[in-house]
Length: 188
Ligand code: 6OG
Image (cartoon, rainbow, N blue to C red):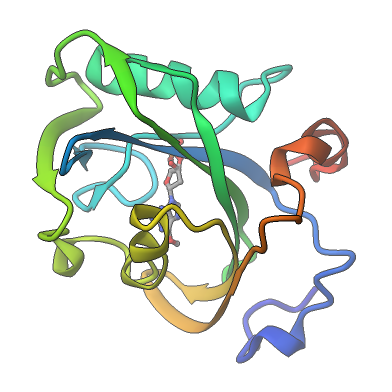
């Protein structure tokens, strides 16, 4: 695919689109607060985000989501709930499929690590100016408990086009087909 000329979502055949990597984001919720991180390294270093990262070989998205929170914040989230998915296509050719989870309970005290600084933030005060630009479009859905499916084109950190579909209550969770998708991932 010639990715440098991508201007709109319809320039991509999403039915055959394959991500280079699979990753996760997991938002731990505690009353009116959300556990975020200031990311120290990796894609989006310097930005505020939910904890998460790329899947290790053989891992399910849920397993990876839990492991990433443990590694980044020394916290173990319980019973992650699948809330949505993102398909990010970058103009430089990179692409990423992200599973998004929430968790209402956890063990441990959020602690700074080599990878991240923890931030407990009130749900009405999300620091969107310091987050990826897509977050302001779907975090309100997540905080309202609505499931979503997003498609995006990015040029580095600039969003070129996007569409977010709110999933109905009868649509299956995206992680049902995850094993298949994991097998389909492009080798790099
Ligand atoms: P590592 O480099 O840490 O995995 N990520 C994004 N998160 C948001 N909110 N918006 C984006 O818009 C993102 N692109 C990537 C997913 C990458 C981590 O970065 C997140 C993963 O948690 C483009 O291994």
